Length: 208
Image 1 (cartoon, rainbow, N blue to C red):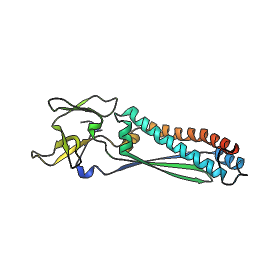
Image 2: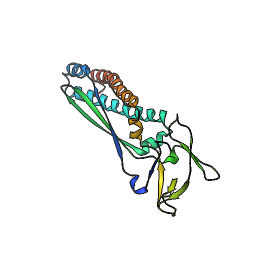
Image 3: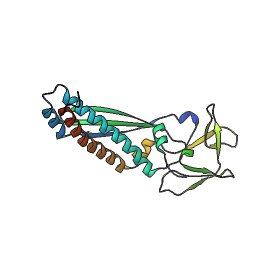
Image 4: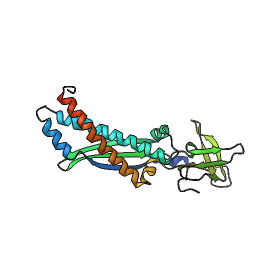
């Protein structure tokens, strides 16, 4: 079975998995902005704060696209099964954006998974993977909220059953070092572009 396919009982599915992206941004731009806007009260803090917020948002959006490029996960599922928090700190050495991604295992049925007329389950999680036939796995609707997934019995009895799931989005990001690097590059690039926009807006009176 693929390393990207997991078996979990319903009670364990809500266990979140986290990953962090820490990136230094701003560099010399921080000092330059502070000097250029020194004559306007709180202007530098507002410009830097706004640019950092936009940079962090771009990093989060890029992460979603990067994951979808490698895995059969929709934008809606990325959003539904992933939460992110931004922690921003500034000191003499620069500004750090710490983005925490927390996610849950996504049901295998949400990936490229098909159940044919005979009940056979065929799936693949990564776009570069071959399709895999899952023996002894079946589709079923369970729970009071009518959750539909693919399951496997753990014994010869009807219960217990475990649901088949794909990885969480943090696991998808951790599996590829290039993704983390690319997200960091995107954060820095967006900050450098956005800070120029914020400076211009303040100097021209568009920001109060």
